[in-house]
Image (tube, rainbow, N blue to C red):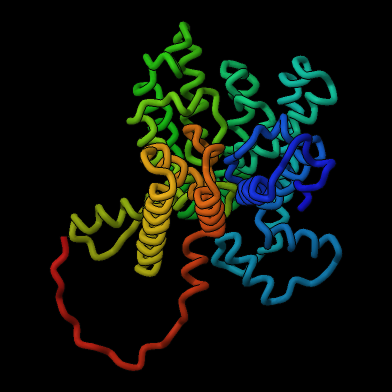
Length: 414
């Protein structure tokens, strides 16, 4: 409704445009059906930035911070909801974690805006440059991928400030607040939680894989890296586009010019996403790592799953299986419906659906061409991708205590 106000836009804006954009912002996805910088006024861009901030923090975290500021008690029910929202297993010090989230957000976004202003202000002027810096800092830290520039960040593809500040913001935002608390809490690495160790290990493997994979596949593509004569420039662009793919959705190359094999690699990275209790989407890095560990344990005939000297319970493994299965099902159904509605664009559709589910925001250029059916499907998938498949499963399922135990039988698998 705010985006539909006359002071929010400069041209015609339909209800479909407003709903799609609002959903994309609050789910920190970044898919757009129009040029944000040209179509929206400063007020409209402020509405988008506010929705990004709200969606990135998480509704429960935001509500808790407001209640704390007003001096109102949270209550047991609120603590339970906050625990689920932050993916935290303990009720202890939840308000402290919410306070840590707020401090990290403020420090990172203010510092990011000031640094980005060094690049944007000289080019755009003081007022417009500062607003662009603030908007992109909020968008980057919350892994939203929204930009006020018509071609994204292509015009800043080799800018050193953009290529360092923007990735730093979305990596910190996407790695998870629990990890940030462990790393900055002054404890030695040996005392970090198993979650933090697995998250850092997975991130440390996925970042070089995506950067080097993008460089290898696109090095001679004239539509992407091939347009740069300098090896350094190609490596810089590979760095930015490689690390942004899993969560943030910014682009310094034309995504529509990617080779098909690169697009398939990007689809896999977008589905993995970032970390739990973060501003990122996807099935999450920890889920992916535990799934790989469970697969290795099965082939080694191990009866217990363990990592870094700690065991991982069967309930966690079942949770990973359920999350992966529901995610694959959602993506498959989305691709099927989108293919029916938009015949003949399978790779573009698969890329779009994966980007929506992973709340990434990258697109091969078909977002603006979606019909009403396609927009509805993408809106639903963005929502499910941000809320989380397990939340949907818990909402639909009922917990029952079995009264009868049946004899065990064997089925043939594989």
